[in-house]
Length: 196
Image (cartoon, rainbow, N blue to C red; front, side, top):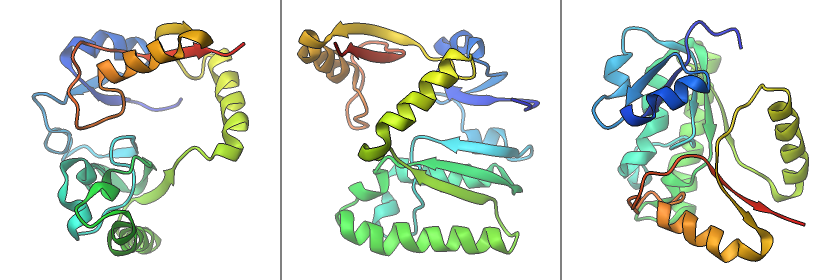
């Protein structure tokens, strides 16, 4: 990809796995803080799939996950870019979704864009999310990149279409995308449901 270094966060137990996928170094999220570790050597690009939407200083920014995008900006060069994937973490505040969008996400997005336009902070791209109407096109593009070896993925388990309830139960047991639930067993990769 032309990068001198690719750093990712994972547990120490997954270090070899992520290095097989292309990472050159890791931050062990259980014992290290990525902002402290890389405060003096900033990145050209940071992909934030944890708290990917902009967050301001109102109640929506009070949960820990909502702080990932602002923290990601702290380890990105002023000339760099932070890419956010929408996760809804800032929408889980005590105020509810609409106030969080109006009082936190949108003002923060405006501030991010203005600071980047004045070369005072890294550029923010996103937040990205899958649009239902474009999902087929997006998935076709992803398949092409996987086939060409540009993207690597790990398949944890495959299920037939008839076994979709078991696939969902496995996802739920692993914690899935629910940040409030701890994983009951180590889990790595994607669950695949084969559609006939």
